[in-house]
Image 1 (cartoon, rainbow, N blue to C red):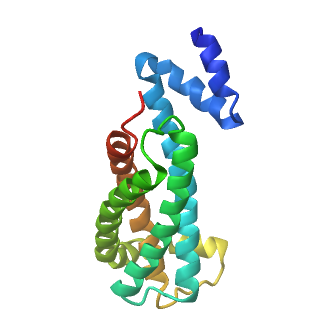
Image 2 (image 1 turned 90 degrees about the vertical axis):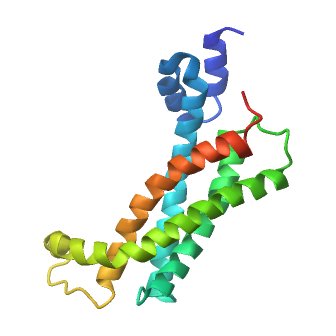
Length: 191
């Protein structure tokens, strides 16, 4: 099969594949790894939406960020929802050719890697959310008031803002760890 035929076959899976493959094919011999990384990153973006959406919902309802324990619990619940989403999509889309191990074994490996990510991210967020919220609230308050005139931050507003900022930083760091750890352990059977 020619390179063009292989490209067209892989690009035909879904509309996003064509864009990812167009970018990945610019990397020559490394195009397959770049394709996997771009798919992994896209799944990560969807996971981040799940993560943030769950966090915002949980903090607005049952676990407001009144202390480090509430923040750790809320971010852990959100992280768990994102991990389930990410495993599913990475298994069927990013690594569809990884089938020498059972789904159960891969889920355990993916979960162990994710637990390391969760631990590091939870410690980071629990330590950083208040200082980040205190630092960024005065800086962002004019923009917030532009969107919501007359806004007065609540007692937990700095905590919510700090949690989100700390999460953004944590997600970026965790994405690289998760990609390489999963690529070379969970999905090590692909070419």
